[in-house]
Each structure stands twice: as C-alpha cells, then as structure tokens.
Length: 164
Image (tube, rainbow, N blue to C red; front, side):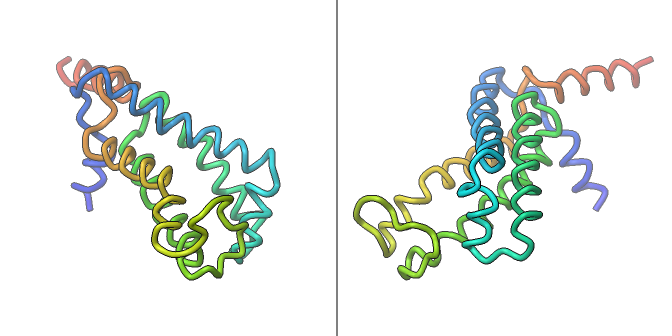
C-alpha cells in the first residue's frame, strides 16, 4: 500500500513541458463542467435525479465540487496523479450510468438530437468526449504533470531540502 501511495503522490516530473497542454485540456473541461452543474439544474441536480442517483442534490454538488477542485489541480499540476485517477474512475462511472440505457433505448435522459438514437453507434457517438477525458487522464496518471507544474516545483524543493 505504501508503494501505491508513494507512486500516486510522487509522480515523475521530468516529462516534456508540453504536457501542460494536456493538463490545460483536461483541467479546463473538468473545471467548466463542474461549474455548469451548479449553474444549470439540468446539468447537475436535475440530471442526477433523472438518472436515479441516491441523494441527487448531495451527489450532484459533490461531483460538481470535485470537478471544479480537480480541474484546478490539473491546471496547476498539483496532485496530478491522484486527481487523474479520481477522474478516470468518475468518467467510467459516468459512462456506465448514462450510456448503457442509451444502448437499450431506455435512458431517462433526452435522446441524442440526431441519428443514431440507440444502439452501439449512439453510445460510441455520445461517449466521444468521455472517452477523450478518460484517455487524457490516463496519460496524466502514467506520465505525470511535466516540468511546468506545481508538482515539479515541489519535487525540486524536496530534493533541495534532502540534499541539505
């Protein structure tokens, strides 16, 4: 267990500076999607209610807050691996809880605006952004935040203190 915790909280930080672009992509999307859950009821509490989540208000607010905070953490490159792992799990839950019913045509959410409306092609079309977010976060989980990150600055500071 110690190895897993160490792996999560001491990511490699020597990756290319361009990883910043990936963090901006993922962090930005999670940040604004979290904000939307508070601003528009149909994106937050209403959606969680339609999907049948227990305690939809609490669940929606928790998920929205986690997306805002996690998005900011990814943007800053702080706790990158732990945040990316959380988002991979969250996105898998989101896909499973919303897209299986779409496959069968039994989703309580509005049908897609254009064909296909059910079946595998509808699911593949509708999960495109979820898929991209999962893979982006998986990349950050494996590769770390890169040099332009708070994780990098903190690791440099740790190395400095251990040398003294």
